[in-house]
Length: 279
Image (tube, rainbow, N blue to C red; front, side, top):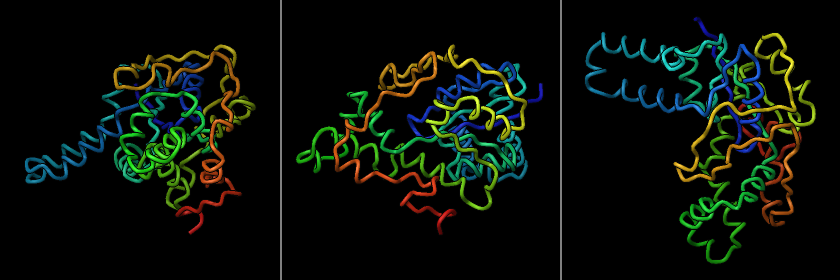
């Protein structure tokens, strides 16, 4: 079966898993678990461009290009649905997007879920996860001796080159002129409070007919074994019906709220400036 491939990226704790579960209600769509394909493709591409056996022979170079172009077809060979939405939060990073354009489609469609940065931080802090405390303590020797444990976790989450920073880099690609029309941003609150309108816009973006979703019977198709990699068991759990997260910003210190407010550069009122959009 010939398949159409789209992509689902997003910031952490922004409703990405929830949206994927909703998309999987559509019998014509397979929205994947968190995908290893960007890593697979990036690693193989690097090897193909540096390994002696690959670069010394033109025939091997051609075969490597063909192999990269067939990654998704081979990986999803058993999927019997016409539309596959590959879900990995960093599909939009420049390196990953270049691979998509070169080997999958020159005009990809990437759905990108977003949420207020402070709400993302608060959602993580609310989990009170030991792995975050441990990682924060290991990475922050100096401030760990004079800052509160919660602030320490917040600063770890917002560290340069961390997961949130990587997500912001992935989203920033949406504003590069050469990527115009390739991204569709989905706000977490829009998905929760205006689901019909939000899903209709997604289908318009994907150029697919609208599907009538059941927002009161949401089931996650895949089973994540997060504990096996040291993450909380419930990290990617979702509610069975749409409802706003009860996370309050009161869990954050005034210092953190001041430091990381107005970072939502995809909105007009943000004070944070990014390449492509502002300069």
